[in-house]
Length: 138
Image 1 (cartoon, rainbow, N blue to C red):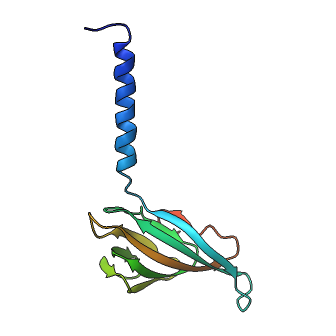
Image 2 (cartoon, rainbow, N blue to C red):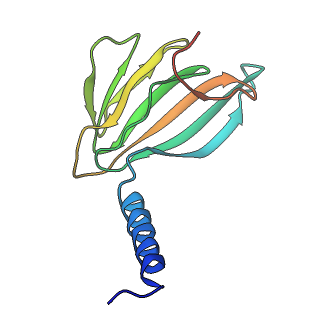
Image 3 (cartoon, rainbow, N blue to C red):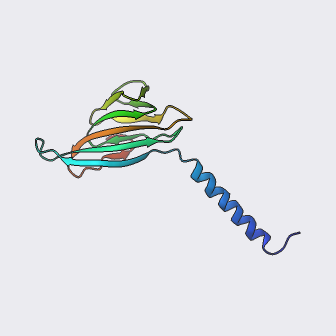
């Protein structure tokens, strides 16, 4: 039997189900700055370490970085391709890759749909630079 509260309850239920589905389907990376140190032997440059974590099936949008990037895969397997490295390749825990300045990071994603993956990115860039920007470098 329907009453005046039925439409309101239906809307609340749909909203709650939608929020739950959104929370359970996070497919983007989580980036956390671990450290940033100005380099005394390279005036005007900062070395920044960032932990990048991908949920199963997670990926980053195409992007570019302000400087040089050295990446060390900590856990899982990460598929990566930059404009400087050729075709996409899967890197496993313990492997590394390098992104030269001005390159575009075209593919950056967890190669597994069931296991998380993470990497440590070491970036050397000008002091105060925005380290990651969406899209291609100009």
